[in-house]
Each structure stands twice: as structure tokens, then as C-alpha cells.
Length: 411
Image (cartoon, rainbow, N blue to C red; front, side, top):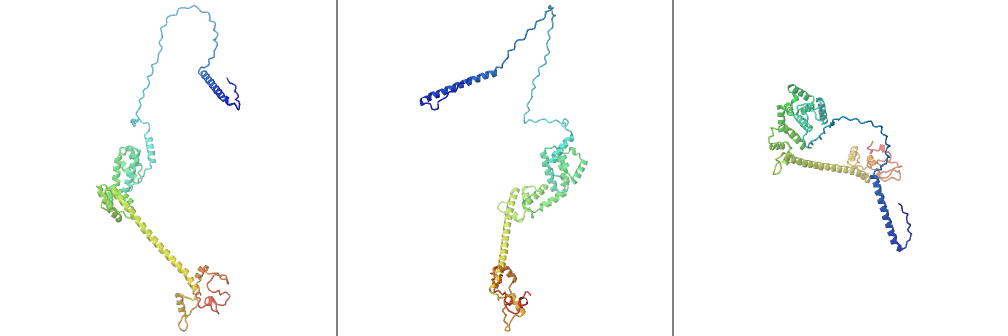
């Protein structure tokens, strides 16, 4: 039901405002009540399905009933009721409980498939190969790396032997073939493999040579860390030679260079443990290298300063020579005097004749920019311009040219 909208005057009087507001509130309340009734009716219609009234079908006319005859008694039949299935009780397995593993004969994977999977896992680990030279350090390093990889893969004893034997190449492969000829490697444990490997590559002659090298090993030109690495490899191969940590510290102090060992043993408390000895050696090496670099830098800068001073002095002497010649063109150096003496340029009284000194062409070429430009010839040169004058450019006399001047030493 929609009520007609009432018009409100635009400018109602002040006394009617209260009545207008009350009327508006009343209309809003009525509209809210109507909306509530409509919602209730819609809800009832949604809940109660509509049932269409179907008229009853027409009753058929029954046929004629025959006379009733007596029915013999029938034994009651009991239906076959199937047994009720009992609910299945599932026992939950704790999360941390160990799940039993089926034995090897129950597993469905054949032996070849398991070996292929093992090979793929081992190949992805990128295990190092061993070719078999009789080098105890290389053999020991390979054995340590292989032990780490096999432990990470969590293999059985026989699988460890199988993977390690696959990494043997060249001479080591031939050695393993000889082991297979005299032992059943299928039942060999990992410790048996290690014993066979050590018996081949850690024999008495090799170990004796390693002991001699350990007792005479010195640092030389190696760094502290390189020397310590080599020392640890030798001590790992000779466990019977070092019976205590004090003996190991003594051999390590003997290994270091003299300048490093002197600083390591300095002070009231010498090193007692191996870690303390290595730490002191590294600190001593750092300060020694720093002092060497400072001394080398000092001598390098000193040499550069000396070379720079020599270059500046040579440059100053080269620049001062043309200026001296320009200020006194009659002056001659000691070399020129010697030449004049050899040529006999002396007068009857034995006094040296003063001839104008020949200009140094190379000096003039280098320093021509320092002279002012001549207004007569347009060139830059010292002294009086002699263009247009029949005089020699060397000695300034008439009667000959520069090429025939007796003072021209460039002939």
C-alpha cells in the first residue's frame, strides 16, 4: 500500500515546524511497520511450499465378485536378514613411531632397479675420483671426502663399498680387481675396505718417508695458513710420531720462519696449545708484512723524488743555457775554447781571439718561442737582424758567407 506523498510548503511558518516534524516521524514509523509485515509474509511463503489440490481420480467400477472359497493355512515365512557389518576399528599410529620395513624378499623392486637408483644418487653427489698414484696425502684426502659423501647418503656397509669402488679409476681400478680375486667384496664392510686401501697406499716405506718430511718440514716462502695445512696433512699420516699436543706445538714452532717464530715465542707465556700457536703466528705474519710494505713504499717514494729532482735540474739547465747565450753572445764555453785552441785562434801575444759564439740551432729551435718576433724579417731570433746585410751570420764579418766561415763548426 503506497501512500500519496504530501507536499510541504517551501517557507512554512515557524509555529508549524513542530507539527511538520511530528508528522514526518509518524509517516516513517508507519512505513517501517509496513516493511516489517511484508518481510514476514515473504518469509512464510518461502517456508510453506504450495500444494496444488488435485481432484481425486474416478473410482473404477468393481467387477462381479465370485464366490469365496476357503484358503488353506500357509506357514509363515521368515525373511533372511543379512548380518549387520561391524564397524571397522582403525588404530592410529603415533607420529614418532617407527614404521616396520618389509624384508628384502617382500620388496617389489628388483635388484637391478635398486642399483640404478643408487648409482643416480651417487652420481649427483659428484664424488671425487681416485686414479691410484702412491701419494699418501692424495689418498688420505680422497678417503676423507668419500667418507663424508657416503655418510650423508646414509648407505649400508655393502652400498658404501659399491659406491667407493665405482670411483676408482686407472691404477686404482686394477688394484681393486686384485682385491676381488682374493676376497668376497659383496659381503665386505666399509672398515674392511678402508683397511685394504690403507694397506696399499699407506705402506711402511711411504710412512717412513712422510715421518722424515714432517721432522724436517719448514715454512719457507709459504704463508702461515699454507704451512699449517701441509703440517696437518703430515701429522694425520704420522699419528705415532706425535704423542701429545706439546710435541705438536714444538714441531710447529720449528716449522715457522725465524722472524715469525721469534714473535710467537716472545713474552712471558709461550704458546701451549696448537690453536694459540697458529693465532700468534698469523698475527706476527700480519705485522711483518705490514712493515715490509711500509719500508718498500718509503724507498719507492724516495726514488721517485730523486728522479723528479734530477729531471727538474736537467730542465732548468737546458732553459738557462739559451738565456745566457742571448745575454752574452761573445761568451764561449770550455768546449768551444778547446776547439779554438786546437784550431789556433790566438793572436801574436798569445791572447785568445773573441769571436761571436755560434748559435745553437737546436737550442734556438726549442726556445724560439721565448724570443720576440723581428719586425724586419718576421722571425723570432736573438740579437740584431742581419737580413739584407752582406755579412756572415756566424762571425758578423764581410767577405764570406756562413757556409765558408772559419768559425762554422757545422761544416
